[in-house]
Image 1 (spheres, rainbow, N blue to C red):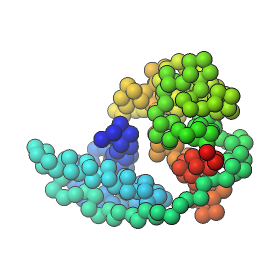
Image 2 (image 1 turned 30 degrees about the vertical axis):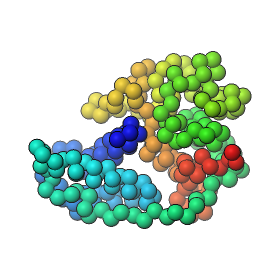
Image 3 (image 1 turned 135 degrees about the horizontal axis):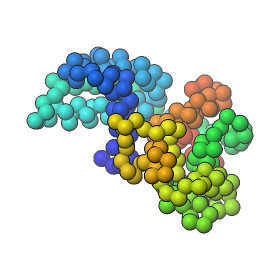
Image 4 (image 1 turned 45 degrees about the vertical axis):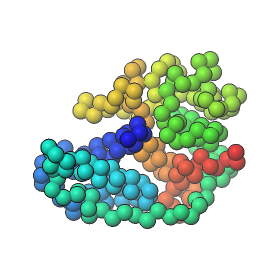
Length: 229
């Protein structure tokens, strides 16, 4: 697996573990039990996100069933249907909508910097979340491929100050001792972990529900394609 896939699958399994109960015996789990938990944890997940979570569980079940573990006896994802992913093009967020979004007082500096980076540059979502302070220009704190005179450069500079190393985009809280991430995903100065894609996507959808005619909220992918390149 690529580092991004490992990180995504780890987040799915940790979330599922918390929902099922960390002390629940593995032998007591059934596909139907897991399916009910999936529906509770991710009731509004898009088909693509649902299928990614499902793939993580299937991968774990395949690994766990191989010798010498030989557990579980059945595929824990067998009661989880694969959701159809529409190939219809998604409407990107309109530039005027994005400008109004950034002007909202309830948008944090972290989200304002991340969203601006995705909007102004050709950086992918995975690349943005994987950025470390060491990747930024040492003098301007500008991300690779970004104009140093852009508003995003100022937002990044303000966001990382006074830190000098570690992930650019951090989670709100420190991880629990039992869930300490790898050193590459942990800020050595604050003890907080790298912001996850799942959390970043959730926040953006919540903040854009009022803009989306469907009421579901926009995705970071739609934001990234909002500005003409």
